[in-house]
Amino acid sequence: MADISAEKRVVVLPDPASLAEAVATRFLQRVAKRVEGGRSAHISLTGGTMGIEVLRSAGRLAQRADIDWSRVHFWWSDERFVPADSPDRNDVPAGPAFLDRIDVPRENVHRVPASDQGLDLDAAAEAYAAELARFGPTATAATGFISGPWPSFDVCFLGVGPDAHIASLFPDRPEIQIVDRAVVAVRDSPKPPPDRVTMTRPVINSSKRVWLVLAGTDKASALGLALAGASYPSVPAAGAKGRRRTVFFVDEAAAGKVPPELIDGEY
Image (cartoon, rainbow, N blue to C red; front, side):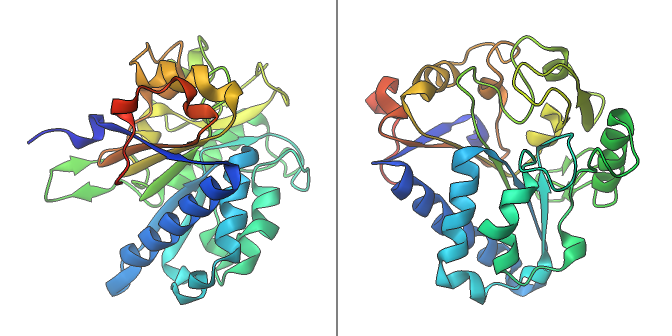
């Protein structure tokens, strides 16, 4: 059987607003389908402009009220190691955008420890890895897949930087090469703030679906390199792939360098 995760799909929307709404609609549909029959869902969120815009759009959609959010767990692929109430954190804007607008149990929202919560950076990374391990490994009998000590995310959202970084895995840095840990500390990040906590590639790539959402002309080169199969240590976005689907949701500005044959008009 062909490995459909290797097929990177590109879905193009006209502008950031329509992009966010389309991804949000698909996200709620996916979660609703997953929790039917009492199954649990694990979702990895991301920060950044488009990550929050997708959540904001989801928070406005009426169908959010029809989902049993008690079955859904939320995580973050990376977090800035700053105080808990800092606007620099990825989880802070996610509250008013979406999480505060759904009936999700507090214990289902798994936040990375903050810098003012009594742990140093390395201990925060270890604590988040331990929290992931409470919900793993994931075993899939149909395919024989067994994850590491972490859940297999039903959807893992990722943003992509102009330098093609994903989560806090930056080009030509040691963190992108780490495969023996679920979560690592990042120091002296090339993008402020300097101290961060990030999931590693094995966790991201254990996801059923990886959805990369990006907009703007400044992302066009990164998108082109990721689709061209560039080396992932230098182009981290090229190394992100879901076990079932890998989809780049982009606006027309970001898609300027995408060959027409790679654009999926039906997905």
